[in-house]
Image (tube, rainbow, N blue to C red; front, top):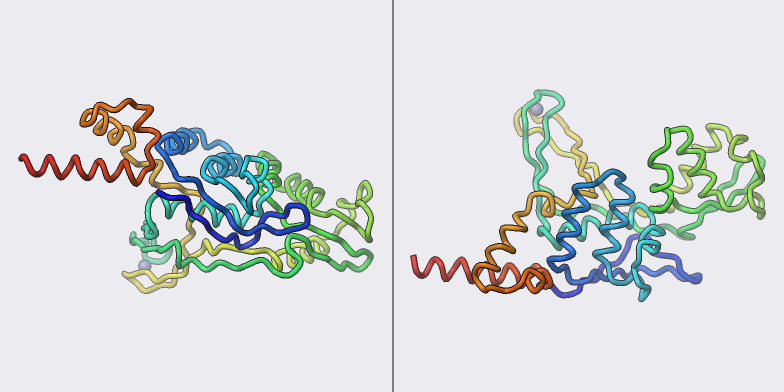
Length: 275
Ligand SMILES: [Zn+2]
């Protein structure tokens, strides 16, 4: 698998420039093993996503994509990258099993990752000016690091910390102590609306109809799922190659997935020839 480049819907702000090109590294067996092990200890989704993307990405706009850089990407960029990674590993098409909310029958829907609508960032990204009655705020779009920090908190505390982190200025100055507590529900609603306007987004709710009763259904897809790394017969593949070629585990792990599959294909075909 050659390196693979995508354009982020948002982008990474570095030295006053937005960098939108993200380059994945070729995925080898060792990286896949890391994905599998991360899947097993998936206690915090935001930390899991940071770990996975830092292992899978090479660069963002020429900058080495280490965990810190990945944690500074906005939520939509991280969702977008996880979907692209899933496409690289498992192909563009996948199926979601759902259950009709009306007639309760099960149905499958086919999803093409490349067809999921993506909204690009608006003007001023990642910052937005929010005009409240008494103040003008400069806010920034939440990033992975914000998600990591609020993940263990209860809803109210999470919202408080998120506002504290994302409100950078109040009337041109750093926010004063107690400012967040002075915000009304309407103020917070207004901040959310303005940020949503300029935020990039990836569609994760799919509208469809139940094939049995035709009722309209909304099916949610989890953009952070790497199905191939959860159910893959990874160890079986390594074992088959080791048995056939007597290569060391280390050598097999260093192969990109596409080459590993090519050899497995050859093994299958030569077995077919002699049976
Ligand atoms: Zn139905």
